[in-house]
Length: 198
Image (cartoon, rainbow, N blue to C red):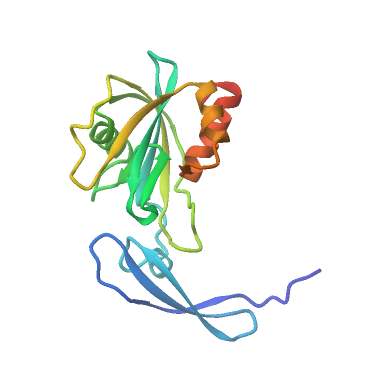
């Protein structure tokens, strides 16, 4: 079946809040039947990416660290305010102005776990995990790491426990229904549990 040829058109974007790290925006658009509609979403950018068309630079990074000495993945169990509970995820953080993905990954990993990244294996392009709610993009950084876990670099608003996970432990974690998972972490752990590879 052929489409009508009509397309959704963005009319304007307006900011609704004035917070430091993330704001709400209202987008007005015309649907395919030329009806005006609105969509409210969050962005770390002002103006947001849909308004500027600039999507090349990610907002944040997520580190997928493999601890070579133990043969295990490193994940964190972190208290997340919107969940009012602990989330199992990978170390992550926001890029600072002018900071490279690699430098951000090294800085955030050391801050959150007390360990060091050795070698960057590969990085993803900017990807989106909740595009119905936000234009936030992240880059996944696969790397090897070394050292012993500590929480010396975390701030007063961060509560983080570092965990080392074998393939067997990854399978067991992924089977638990009662814990909260970051979607990207669950997918990587599930695959790691199957073949033990990054």
